[in-house]
Picture 1: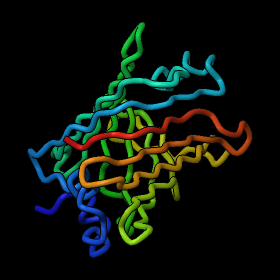
Picture 2 (picture 1 turned 180 degrees about the horizontal axis):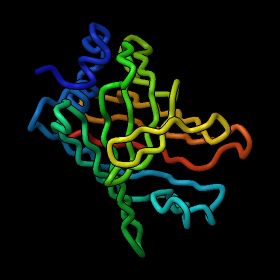
Picture 3 (picture 1 turned 45 degrees about the vertical axis):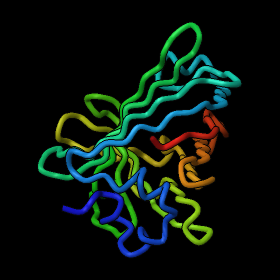
Picture 4 (picture 1 turned 135 degrees about the horizontal axis):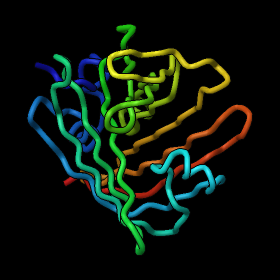
Length: 196
């Protein structure tokens, strides 16, 4: 069974730099750990009361991400367990990337939290001769209640831009920015990570 990102990207997956392939080509039962440091920012710190996974602003935060290929509801998915290790606390977040519900090529569905309560459809693009993988929100976004996916109205949609760029055979540069059409840039993080 082919890995989720290889299936979603089709032939474009083979263009990716080897370090990005190692990060994303996880079949069932395979895993990879990614570690490094990040600069984190958050324009609306009060919003952490509503979304506690939002980062605390800091210059150098130790980050560890465990990724695994897992089966969920009969589908091969890609699991993210992130830890942002601040001096005073550790913030954890969980994402399960699933096949796109509409079955479109080069798209996936990110579902957040455990149990999942939010879903964002992402378009995948390989750029710069395979040195970068870009993930951007496109299409439907959902409020998830058990097995039900309820489409969110457009005014609640957020915009997410994630870029992972190969630096060498072991390191990637990651930058994530989340924004809203009305409130502007909300939060994000960036830094270098080593694929172990």
